[in-house]
Image (cartoon, rainbow, N blue to C red; front, side, top):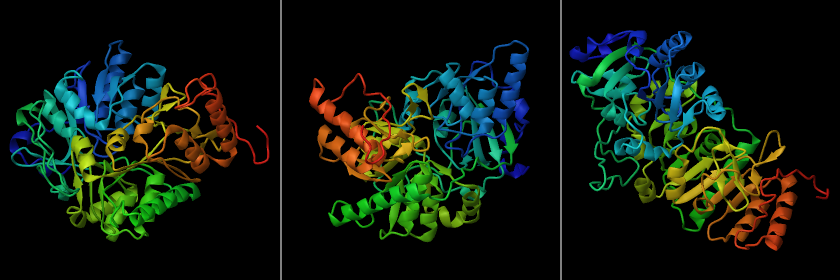
Length: 502
């Protein structure tokens, strides 16, 4: 290991093994860990802690902890701790299959929170006491300041709030990351808050490093490991079609004078469809793009490298293995074009609204009136969580939700009569897109929205059933503003081939 990355002589004496560091985490502790969408999470201490918990359980001793992060992490953290039943409560977002299974089985508590709310809830005292922070960094400077790694998330708050701090110094991270981050220390509690002074996506308002009280650091663990890299499939016909509708819509808005040629700052959720949109923008007519988002994926990185995008602000990277290597090779070029911020700033409603962000997010299902379910299957089983989609959707200049029109090999429609769980109400959904078309819902009443959503976005084999439900609702529902037949609103609609009867 490169011990020179721990440049503080006082803190270098606290370097120890992951097992020794994990031994300092008490049972029942709330532990704030770094990590956001598989980047910047601690690689060694959670695994050592899982081994310790497994041993305690084998001896019949209770040992579980609360785990707070920025967002999803990786198998070495969520997966390892969930496997040994070591997590009592998890927040604010997860994507691990073992964790998901335990949450839905009722053996792990889970709080799904808007990502912009987490840090302030911690400061308000709403979440309880934070005992330990386990934070990955790219280096420790001589004065004890910490060089952030590939995500910031809630790390600033965990370092401030925790009684004790364990650092993982990861030599795989490029120390040239120093200078890419913008850690803002100007937030306050009500009634002493002041405006967040960001007027453009590239504005820097904070510091390039974390402050950390050296007296709180109880252990430093040296690691050398890459992030959990995300594998992205090449855009398929469905994702290309969705991207094509969105790009055509952007061009229309430019022609109508509602968007400049440079568009407005882009926010994009994680996934193949989002990358397909970015790939389309790389070939499109829109110059000097910018992004104010929470996660920077391959597609957005390619836009920066090609010169199509001038700058991107985010809180974390979420790159494939190849893109991560390219990022490290080109970090000197990228450092002035990427800003990584705390998620309370990257997802801040005030800033999102001021900048006029164009928000693009995925969903599980949408109903005929435009309500969106992003989180639950059949109303009760969590998938991942709301993440930052609510922060952006409610405050964006344009709120776009996109999805393939069907799931389960075409047997289920993603456009349904009524969603089984509501994360984004119809009031926060302006544009709904599938491979079959784009429904512009701005300025439409509920019944007008329903007709457009069915005609433009539903798969052809489900349109007849959706139309039949809607027309009968308009006729027989007791209220005619948002007509529903509640006794059948959650029935699974069946596909109908063209020419078949209902």
